[in-house]
Every structure is written in structure tokens, then in C-alpha cells.
Length: 219
Ligand code: PMT
Image (cartoon, rainbow, N blue to C red; front, side, top):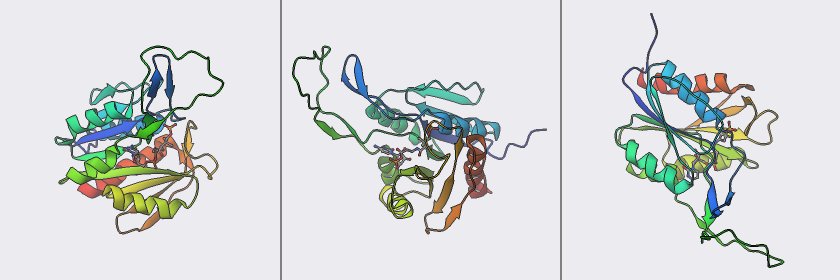
């Protein structure tokens, strides 16, 4: 018989990059492959959870009766999808690399290469996780922090700013951590600022550690 400690729990997971359009053929994106979020989704479903996986553009594949994939393109679309499902959700894990800024104007037609210089004016995207932190009730909110300097300090600030229960810090200074790779090296920081550094391991194993945090929370 299966051990399904998350049976009946609804978990919302974000994954992948967002693409912010410049014109009909171009966008501003980032290096997220979606693997971290998809590995978490599969692990949560294997532990019995009903998973809503809201993902930016990715080549990742997932096939599980308890995982529903909602594909999105931009940060605004991811925001709308997250808010559509949030109320009916028990926990959130935000692994997506959401663009902080988007082009202010999206050209209707392909931009021609006439000028020698071309400037794209950007404006802020909504902070999806912070907006969920504002309206959360009983939901257990897990965010990621991807840093390149001052890692622990910036991660702690994100816990406060986004009203999180837990943050998963990964640093691009650690070999084998972050984008694209099949491994990651993370440190958990809870809302009382307790640090729990983990070894470098496969993203599947990191996903297990993260899902275990939710299982412990409900135990
Ligand atoms: O997809 P992979 O190739 O497997 O790589 C995995 C990963 C490196 C993308 C992943 O482990 C990771 O760190 N994801 C978060 C990346 C990120 O954008 O971090 P951040 O520190 O900028 O954002 C902090 C948190 O706020 C994140 O949970 C993010 O999803 C969320 N956020 C950020 C900006 C925004 N406008 N809205 C958000 O919800």
C-alpha cells in the first residue's frame, strides 16, 4: 500500500521562466528550465497531494493523475492563474523565475532594425508571491530565493517582504546550483530565521526535502 501523507491537500506550484514580450517575435526571458518546479510537483503528487502546476514556457514533461498543468507565458498571466487557484489551496511552492520587469510598450508589429541604438523602457511586474502573502489565511507559503551575493541576508528580507513560512535559498556562487542543471544546493530558512543548509544533490532529492517540509508542517 502507498504512503500518502499529503492526501487531500491542494498544492499550488509555480515553475519555469516568464517571457515578457517586446514585439510579436521577441521577448525578455531568463535561464530557468522548469526542472526544479516540475520535480517538486511530481514529488508532491506522489505523496498524495492534488497539484496545480502553473508553468512558464518549458520543455519539461509531467504525467500524473493528480497534477494539472496550467501553462502561462508572462508574469501577468502567472499572477492571474495563481490568484484563480489560491483561495482553494493549502500550500504554495513558488519555484518560478518570474521577470521583475517587463517592456512598457509591446509593439504590434515586428520592430525593424533601422536605428543604430534601441532602448527598451521597462516597468515593474507584480510580485506574485508577495501578493499571495498579503491575502494568505491558513496557506503554508514556500518561496525560493535565487541570489548572487549577500545570499542569506537577501533571503531573510524576502521572507519578511513576502510573508513566507519558509524560503529555499539557492546561490549561483555554489557549483551545481541554480538554473538548468540537474542538481541544486539549497539552504532552508524558516520564518524565525533558522538556517538549515543542505548538501549538493539531485533536484529530485531537493524536491523530496521541500515536500517533506510540508509533510512535517501537517504532521
Ligand atoms: O528551473 P530550473 O532550471 O530547474 O532552475 C531552478 C531555479 C533556479 C529557477 C529555482 O531553484 C529558483 O531559485 N526559483 C526562483 C527564482 C527567482 O526568481 O528567485 P527570486 O529571488 O527573484 O524570487 C523570490 C521569490 O519570489 C521566488 O519564489 C519567485 O518565484 C517569487 N517571485 C519573484 C518575482 C515576482 N515578480 N513574483 C514572484 O512571485
